[in-house]
Structure formats: C-alpha cells, structure tokens
Image (cartoon, rainbow, N blue to C red; front, side):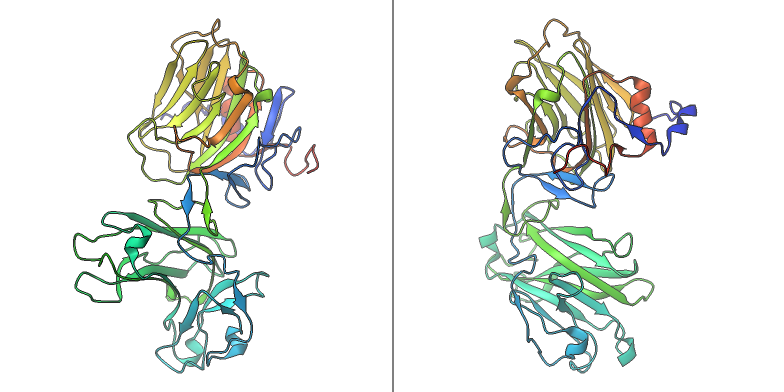
Length: 449
C-alpha cells in the first residue's frame, strides 16, 4: 500500500488524541472491561481475559475459543515448605511444588550450585526459577529442568495422528540472552522412551523484567512412527539455554497445553466460548464510527466463512439492522443487514493480519466504509438510507465474539475500542493511526470503578 497519503500529516505522530463531544464509548482494557466515560459494563459475565501488559497501549482484552488446559496446576498453587532434596537450600529455597518435579546438576554434585526450583518470594506467588549461573562451580550452563507427567496414554488426551498441540507459558528474564526450551518427552513406535520429536527450540524475551507469553505448536506424528499412540508423555521445561554464552535467570508461570494450533490465554482448567457484549445504546443507527486495534493469535485461518473469526458486530447475528466484520483467509468482510435484506462489503488484503492493526468502520445514512490502519479500504456499493434506520437488533454490541458457534470469536487481543455517534472524517481517522497513542482520557477516568 502506498505511503503517499501520509504526507504532511506525519505531524500527528505522537500527539495525544482526545475524545470528542460525540464519543459515546471508550474502553482502554487496562484493568476493566467497562468503558471509561459512563461506566458501561458488559451484558452478563464476559468470557474474556484482560491482558494488563499485552495490549497495543498498555492493556488489552482477549476473546477466544473454548479450551482445556491439559497441564495440572499450571499456575503452581499447590505447594509446601520444608523441601530439601539434597540441594543447597540457601540457593534453591525450600518450596516444593506438589505437581511439578524440579531438578538439575547431573554433571556434578547435586548439593552444589543452582537447580531448577520454585520461588515464592520473588513475586509473592510461586514461579519456576531457572538460575543458570553455575560457572562459579565450574559447571556453566549445566542441565536443569522442571517436569510434569502429562498422561500415561496420550490417546486419552485426544493426541492421535495429525493433532496439533500448543504449549505456552509466561516467561520473564533478567537479560534478553537468557533462554528457555521446552518439549514433550514420549515414546516412539519401537518402544524407545525419552524421545523429543516435539521440542520448542530456545525461546527468548524481547526485554528484561517483563512477563511475555511464549509458545510452540507441535504435531503428533504417529504415522511416521515418531509417537507410540498408547504411550506416556511428560512435559519438560529447560532452563540452561542461552545465546552469546550468557548466564542469567528466567522465571516461568501459567503453563498451558491445549489441543490447538495456536496458544490462547492461560486458564487453570478450562474456558468456555468467548463472549463480550455491551448494550447498543452508544450506537446511532444513522451515523457512526467504530474504531479499535486488533492483534490475532492465529497464524492461519479456515477457508469456511462460517468459522472465520468475528472481530466486531453490532446487533444480533442476521437480525434486522445489524452489521459485523469478520476476518477471512485473505480479506476482511463487512456484512450489513437492514430491513429484510443482506448485503456484503469486502476488502481484500495481501495476507491474514499478523500484528497490531487499526480497524475502523463508519456509516452515514446507509453508506458504510472500512478503514485499515487509517486508510479507507472499501465503501459499500449501495445506499441503505431507507433500509438501515434501526433500532439495532437486540440492542447489543459484540466485541471479539458473541458466544455463538456461527462464527468463531476473534482469537486475538482487542484494545482501544472507541465509538462515536457521527461518521468521522478521513483525516480524523488517519490522524488516529499516525498518532500512535491511546485516546484521552487515559489514567484519569470519568467513572470510578
């Protein structure tokens, strides 16, 4: 896409963008699902996950598919004190995680140096700590690992040939050259145990002292003999990896394994199909603007239009006076339904969105427009001025997913949802994108929660 449209408007870069008198809804998703103007809260309990540090600007909110976490006690809430398996307690502490086994030091004396261990004091809650700093005892980068037995028969977990399995966890490091590796130890068809056909490779954080989600997706390969279908499996997390031969410390929490080809937000047990809905009182059926930032979790999409992720919808699905935006494999689709009619406006993109993207929808007397990163990408071919007049069906707005199976939830993170009761101009929308800042008010809320 040409960059010529930016021109002198680059002066907007870094500017604070304030809401206007027509702004009717604004959600930052830093620590609440509510909007910050009137305190509008979701309809019913939302099935969504706030991510305080993973939004475009601070926090964001994830609306995702249902999932089951195969890991037991992935947030390490079951523990006790007084643990001393022959190691130096002054270095490794005395916390025992009842569902995890931590060890290391095979190359030398187990009573010396650092091992993989649990740490309760660092953050005030238990984490796995990998202190890869054993050069002082002559065992630099010696093996250290934490494990959990996952299954005695992997078929009981649904792990048959071709199934995608994703392992994910939160990671923090004290320097960016400190790495973590993890894998699924299993048995091959010849009965050889200790196979690591599914291993992540070394993963790193982008900055120190910040929790970041890391993940790797594996394919269960029975047909080629790499997996014995009725064998056991153990998760291993390794803490002795690095780059540039650096020593350092890594911390791990919120470990998850799920039968999916991408990672979803951590849940200790399971999560239902995502839903996040608000009353549609903030919508003017005749004129309006919806703006949000969106980052998907998936790397590929199904071909079917009925199972593609729904990003935003106004009104009930296929109800009179409704519209919704979905992401298909190679383009975005906006479907509009007025009184007794359905039409579709589509924009074609070169690939599935993989990073943060600003999406905007405007409407004015039945003319709908879609903007991507501040630039107009499609305009409806027809005028629905006499058809799309409201009221909005069901008086509902669904953000990222509505809990229905007709379309999947967005399976990503949404941030900075703003709704206005007028259609904003092309220049206004482009200025929002070029500013690269959250909307004001931020931090100073009109509503106290």
